[in-house]
Length: 223
Ligand code: DX5
Ligand code: ZN
Image 1 (cartoon, protein in one colour):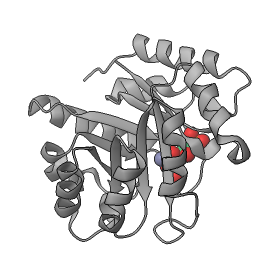
Image 2 (tube, rainbow, N blue to C red):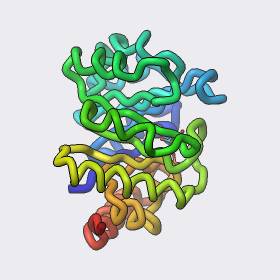
Image 3 (spheres, rainbow, N blue to C red):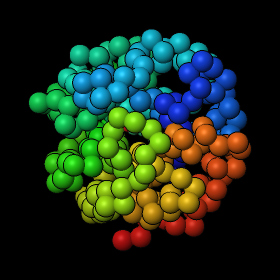
Image 4 (cartoon, rainbow, N blue to C red):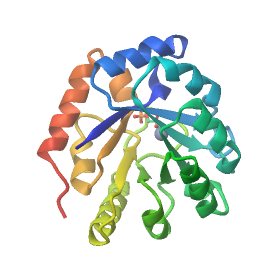
């Protein structure tokens, strides 16, 4: 099953509740929530209070993508805010296993992300400890960028590893995904698709999500 995760970063920040309703009605499964601290990435977005304010208004799976330094400091805040899945960056901390343990101890799903410059070999040792690998398909920090095709080779490597080690692992791709290129990601082995501008920016988000799903179904993982 392919899951579509619209990224709130591309929503109308003056009307978050109705923006979330719009993508929910359009068939989204997850709501991707990009938290940026102006340090790990150059941009600042929003934090736990915004997520907590949206929680009573949505039944979507809250997929929190932390682009912040030293994320362990804030795990409790995001759990309390209503995250179902918390993803942090391998590059953002000195002891990723500690952060993984912390997230899992709160009974929330745990994801680990790598930026385009990070070699895929660095995430491999953690795959058996996590629920989801997030392979960034753009340099994190901003929405609306173009997908970097070379990053999809990492998706393939991670999916191949997960299959050969019988790991139940979700693989999320994030950045520059559209109905036109999503098949490249699903063929490589991704099953959770983040889409910011392509969904929130669309006149008819339902049609975009439907064509993403169709393209994905027609292009399943092929080794
Ligand atoms: C980038 C964020 C993405 C971004 C995706 O740092 O992690 O989630 O919002 O936006 P699009 O789909 O517009 O590239
Ligand atoms: Zn993201």
